[in-house]
Length: 139
Image (cartoon, rainbow, N blue to C red; front, side, top):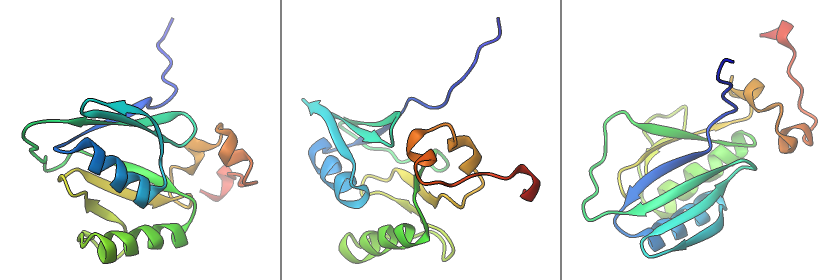
């Protein structure tokens, strides 16, 4: 039998202060804390995935490794952009997107449901509840 992949279960980032990272990600993305303690934390990402945050002695940002977070629409992307730049003083990598490095150097891309990956999300209940459909003929 061939292996069937259903999606990504979790993403892990390294930080030098797990509690501050939880506060940052909870503030910027309104993530729900699942559990944490002793230099580690787990936050819910959507309905089926989670963000694992691990404290390390030395953070060493990578050039290309990153992950994407999908939000509802362009207004929410802009809300994230404003919070990142105004409240946290972070730089957005491009004018037309929301690609940034968190305070620990982890690279994150924020996209909305108009992104081409919408079709991947259709099985998820929270997407079905929005009433959004995908017409293969229009792509």
